[in-house]
Image (cartoon, rainbow, N blue to C red; front, side, top):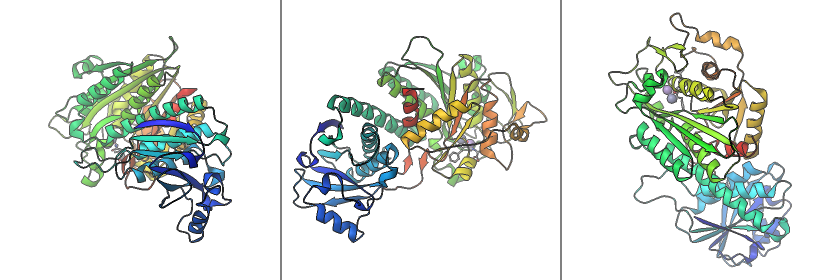
Amino acid sequence: MRIRTTIEEAAATIADRLAVGIFDRFDPPSGALARSSVLRTVESLIESKDMTGNLGETTPILGETDFKAGSLVLFGLGDRTKFGSGAAFSAGAAVGKRLAGRPRKTVAIVVPNDFEGDRLAVASALVQGVIVGVRGPDLKKNEPARHEFEELIVVVEPNSGIDPKVLESTIERAQVIGSSVNWARDLANTPPAEKTPIRLAEIVAERAREFGLSAEIWDEARLRQERFGGLLGVSAGSESPPAFVVLEHRGVESDAPIALVGKGVTFDSGGLSIKPSASMEDMKADMTGAAVVAATLVAAARLKLPVHVKGYLPLTENMTGGRAMKLGDVLTMRDGKTVEVLNTDAEGRLILADALAYAVEAKPSRVLDLATLTGACMVALGPKVAGLFANDDAFAAAIAASAAETGERVWRMPLDEDYFELMKSHVADFKNVGGKYAGAITAAKFLERFVAKTPWVHLDIAGPSWADSDSPTQSVGATGCFVRTLIQWLEKP
Ligand code: BES
Ligand code: MN
Ligand code: ZN
């Protein structure tokens, strides 16, 4: 999708469709519509409650207007006092999703300016939303269900006080971020047979190198040499060998790197502790953490962010083959710790343990992992909020602040040491499951054992990584969550 920016009155923009936002109940009337011939139409739509201005709403206005565009589509911006990047992203996604239903040449979208706040940030989020909205999960349909526009025109009205050059570069960056989110989504939406660990490693390394990152792939033999007992244990039940990818973006000379680690289970059957079929349906997306880390690194390179970041992707299937790890097996992890496996479905922590232990050997200033780790986190926080766990308050606050800026939702969870008692083993240093209670926390306590003293944040994204159903603002399937937040944070970590 070509994207171009223009600073002009919305009424002057020539396009097939012009999308204009309205705040909550259009009260008071404001923006481009208040000055136009459609004012009356909009007011009567509001009066009859055919339109409310709620986020996600899109209402086409057909017929003659004093806008030069072929026709208008009004979109809800929600509560004016709560408006910001988060709402702008959702609103943009709704416009993208709604208009992508059939092929379109030029779609223009007007950046709202009748609110208090950062207009450039909102312009960026709005465009990211449109880019994400025009992309669906229809990767394998013979007749695609969504069509990205040939051209998207981003219209900023002259009274917004935005410099055209700054606008242009902001939108260029928005396009990089939006397409990175989509890449993460596409990877997670890809059928598992097409992204076996080695194949996924190659897909990731190829795109990373294309954008100037260094990428290294370890195969099974190398993983054995490097004593990645957790990753090898999980992969033992699979016909497809595991892989480990290390990506690096050096935006500054030397400096301790920031380490990002992502869970990369390309299919989680549960292993011998097998999942019921319904719980297995979406387990192709159990590599979302790895996809998000890869997409963030590629974006960091494309945006030339002045940071040194390393990405670590442990990739494996979790299957039930004849050599699968068994309950009672004891794995020796990268750092020498021993783990008794009492539930093979608690596999994410086993592969992350090796990756985290290895990542902190490079003495990073901080380490952050993302993982679709526990159903328990969804029980605790619901399907849209990620659990945030940290051994460092400042780091936790920085990630929470970046999430607040993008509108992605996190909630800090406790990590008191007594939770770890649930993980004691009679046989090994500890076991891989805690029992009935506090499942998201015991999983995090397990991970904490492998980061030494490094400031660490763990995001349990089991909920927000996936949308179970379609909604006006979000497509069913993979969401690519936290690519935007991580880039926001890496802009000034
Ligand atoms: N990949 C799952 C967690 C998950 C569940 C992600 C639902 C997304 C949606 C993970 O590997 C898992 O199976 N966790 C177990 C842990 C348990 C056995 C301690 C779980 O949550 O049931
Ligand atoms: Mn599992
Ligand atoms: Zn899993």
